[in-house]
Image (cartoon, rainbow, N blue to C red; front, side, top):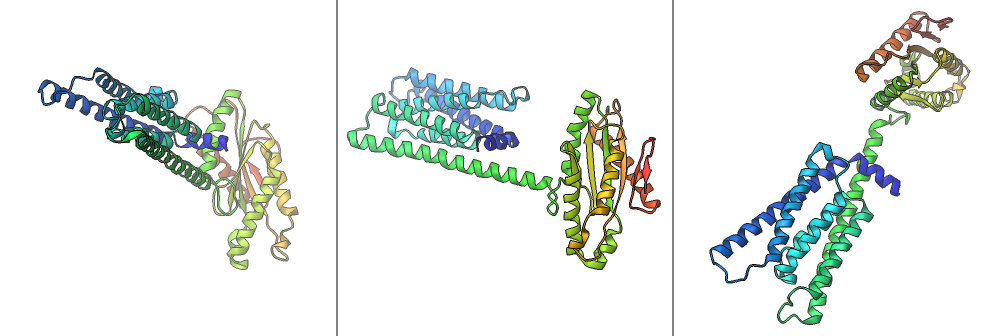
Length: 371
């Protein structure tokens, strides 16, 4: 569960950064506004209150730290390195101090403390968010009990009750925000996985396949490994659909996915990239690996028991193979992968022109085709 939560946090980092930056900006604006109001009432002698140096220091510090937090969340140089929890704790403690110096239990600025707990729940991992909230609530309760001026006529019992109500409100805000954030992250993670999988065969779809190969190209370039691409097309699939119906065609596609999984290696990527078109990519393969894998797949299609789907059914495949040798991975990764798939498509076209049910390798090599 913890690992899953960390993965979800990584998937949605920008959302948390934007929320924290918004909270810091709001805190900065309110602290600045309170400082201006204090200055007006003091120097215009609209109030006979003695200047509270501690309150002014807390407001100035809150404005400074909030401005710093907003800037750190905005700066690309600090992404992934900003002390998110620590800054929120500092902002929350300064807000608690402001509450203590502006009426204690009667201070309207307790809402700032509660909002910090809520934003912690939205942007931090659950355990860290609840620890931060408990720290702020505990500090607030102790400060109200021992440091703040008592509210006239409230008494000890009323004070304790008010502290409990305020603390519960802040913790519930954090809990609700945490639950909302976890649900959101789980939903995003689920949608992300679904967007990368073909719903019928549960193989990678074309988008996920291309993204995976972007990373593999960099690894292949670093270690001077070749990349082999196979494009597999089911022979006469449209006629099969017309004869048996689309439900049977779907069963054939699912069976094909199972066949490819069984015959592909653990380090090979398998995807459905079209209606009846599949792809297999192998990194760190030997020069003849693509030919051998294509030959094995062609034989597997021929030997497969397709009759459990429909009696008398036979399904064969045509396979085009292309190899990207080491040292030719330089350039924009998407264009390289697209060109490699185009070479495999050309080899596939050669097989179809030669009668189907076979394979062809687009590079010059011994025994490059078979049918």
